[in-house]
Image (tube, rainbow, N blue to C red; front, side):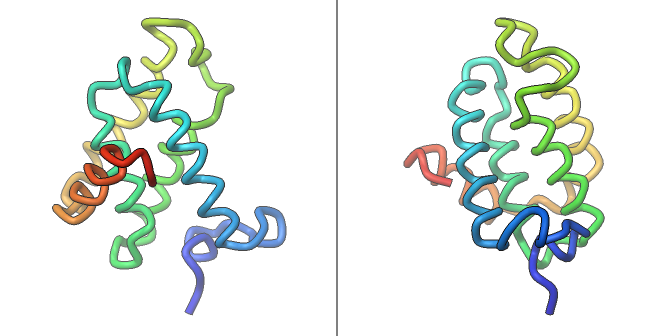
Length: 124
């Protein structure tokens, strides 16, 4: 069976071992979530999307859409730099909301439960 990132077409030779990739994504998402928490009112959806993307039961196309949207959210270089207060996360929010609108039916209660727990404990 393919690993999570291989299913999405990511080359493990370039990105490193899957365990390391997962830790890196988790750390970057948590750091960005902390910075954006006051500016992005749907942070629970963002973290639930992360858990949905890691869920092997989620279809590959949905997982790829979520990973792309989450990558855009955590990358510091994008259309409008995130450090610009008030508007910096605006383009990120637009990308995330568009992705969530497309895949909302795949985000389950257990993804939201995990997100609430992670945001409460500051662990992803």
